[in-house]
Image (cartoon, rainbow, N blue to C red; front, side, top):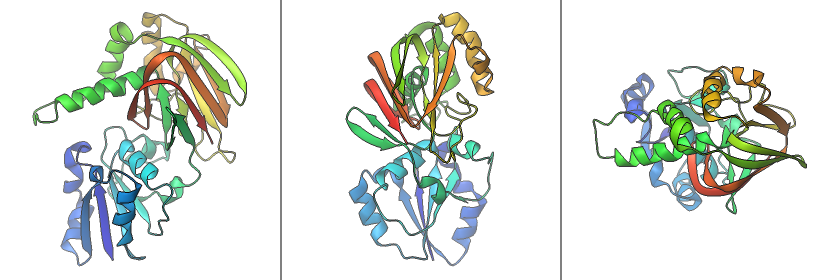
Length: 291
């Protein structure tokens, strides 16, 4: 048996290297094949990479939610017979949280969760998503966070990106809400001053935020939920915003709406950043998510 370990060198400062399970594998007789996942840039690269695997081999992904998203989209059309395991070493690990695992010392089997995933269309391209697609202060946070990571790439003493701090500063000073139309299964809802409009497959994103507490990733009909935080000024929004980490924001019914359906189309009145499982796309005016 060979263990094909695809790791993200940018996730968790390489903490997977210190994991007891990896040290145990290295001390055993099984062969280990290490691969930087960021070097596999498209489905052709994955096709070549997977071609050498045997039926008894297994794949282990080491990274965060973005690593899962990258692998999932690049291999969506490829037949993979090997088991797929996941060892979380990202900063948020929202997928793991959503399936009821707070922490794990061993890689876990995640292949069953890669079936029947929803699709989102953005700027003419299609992507699958595992947790969510988000517009608003979350997209802004990913955009700013990406810029900070790029600036700190060659600084070993740089501090981790503080997304909560980015969100607070964004709400107070930098992020400007916009108008949006949210159409769910053909029914349109129009909003002014939209701060957040994420569509959720799971319950969690952004390192523990829970915008749609009742969302079930195992819903038999594959339904999605979109939460819209809207209409309020920045100071009131800042007061309500922390409640999203416990799902308490939903009690503010004048500024928080949740719609559930299988086809969700969100349009904005100006270009902005959208994130898909933490991966950022700039200059977006609409997204269309469907089960």
